[in-house]
Structures are given as structure tokens and as C-alpha cells.
Image (cartoon, rainbow, N blue to C red; front, top):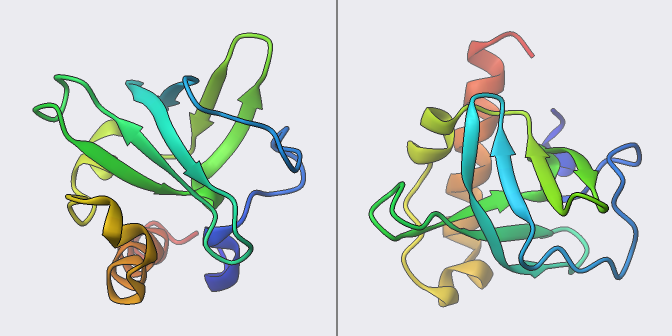
Length: 121
């Protein structure tokens, strides 16, 4: 995944400008992670904040838009090209102010890019 693509939706995933994903269920390759609590659609920093419920002790996780592989609008599901453990091990999201914190967003981006490099993607 290219550096700049981690923060934007791919053209083939079913996303269209203005589509609200709030409330959609979020699934990884090995199970449900939670549901979309809110989304950021500003160019260059598109991402989802996902409420994990009790799965990660009631915390939220920040998911860069580039991890979205497919959106099923009819079923209201967002699919990610990651495992639950990879999502759980990402830099911890603790407050909404981090969605605009360049240092935090950079650490999230680096984390997923390092995973890609380790997997030869």
C-alpha cells in the first residue's frame, strides 16, 4: 500500500463521496471488530473511528480509509484487509483530538506500512 493511499479510499471498494458509514458493522478477515462511530472524509486524512464494544475493553480504534477493501451498502458492512489482532495492536486511540494530531496519524500510518513491508505487500 502506498504511503499516500493509506489515508484515502480505493476506487474499487464501493465508497462514494458523501456516503455515511456511521453505524456500519466493521469486519476483518477473521471476524467483526465493531461498528463505525464516526468518519473523517477530509482529503489526505480519511479514516473511520470504530467503536469496538467489549472486544477491546470498550475502546475505539482509528482505521485509515486505505484499509477498507470493500463496502456493502445494502448489508451496511465495511470490510478491512487486516486481522483482528493487527487492528488491536495498532497505536492506541484514546481521544477525538488525536484525529487531527499529525504525530498520532503518522504513527498509525507507519504501523500499517510496516505490517505491509513485513508481509511483502
